[in-house]
Image (cartoon, rainbow, N blue to C red; front, top):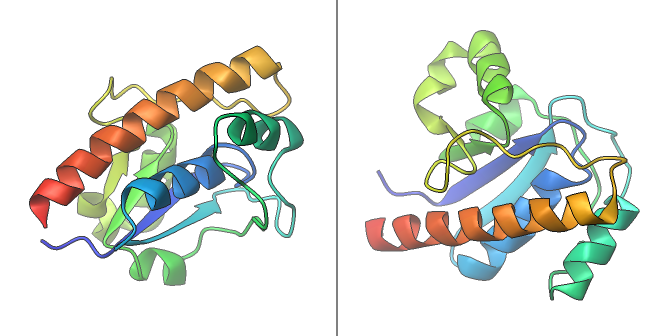
Length: 147
């Protein structure tokens, strides 16, 4: 299966999924990458601490606007990457036909999920960034080799 579009999903769509989106965009310029949240803070920009940490490491979250995950977004994605196992369960419970397209963002680097840094310390955000950067690189290798 050719992967032409990836949707990254977390809860609020203000920390992890926008970061995952931007990291994957850096690695995979030929693939459409977007993000959404299962309980999105619709209309909000990226979290201030997440933006600060990402910016210090060369990744801009500028211009991000949180949006709610829905069936239309899911239908347009060849691959849906979630940040926690519970997110996969929620999506598959709502839409069983998506089961084969929903995988963990850290599938190739641990596969246990990446904790939500929302309203946590800068150090916690930095640790999340490191995990997500490593996971995005692993996905990029696999998706590039599959093309």
